[in-house]
Length: 231
Image 1 (cartoon, one colour):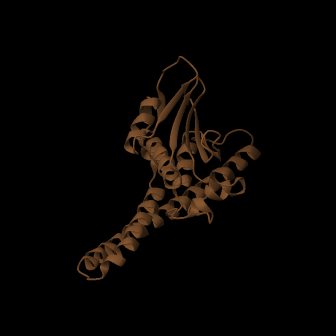
Image 2: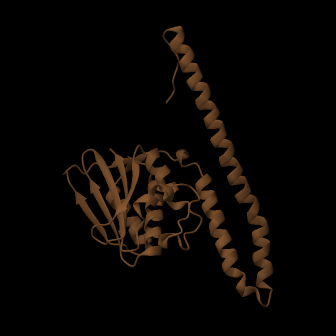
Image 3: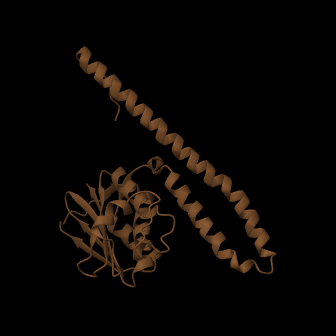
């Protein structure tokens, strides 16, 4: 939010120091984001040449999985670098959004727990929230056979919860699992991609003033990933 220093001289000096610190942090984040995005874009050209070369190789089949994995990593880097704040918030039907995402991801079962008769839409950045839900569902499908999506809408909060019957995440590993580029060594970390899905989802939840909580699914026994957004 815009902030203009005012008041006593000591308060103004403290406020100016705060603004200077904030500006430095914003510049640092912007520079790192631009660097990550630029490197990812630059790597696409040689990767494309490699794909073409492999197509003409007699024994190129062995290299195709590695190239595919590199493409997925680049997509993850670009997704992490993308600035979702540019999307404007708009009134969205959160239940319809959940069903739309679930259908795209393989018709995942959706259970709605509407604790209030108020059906007013929630102001969301639709594409960002859709992406966050897709990240959670894709992650759940990697490690479980059964995946459910739950939606709870109350007067104060919107809650999305994705649960699976996979191995879950140990409580001591939850914090590390939310860190960018972090891949766990345990069962859920095997073939875990580039390690950005949960961190991107956390950023999207925080940008809405909410949070992402990881725990144990009581119904399915695997991971429970819950996005809570205040209304």
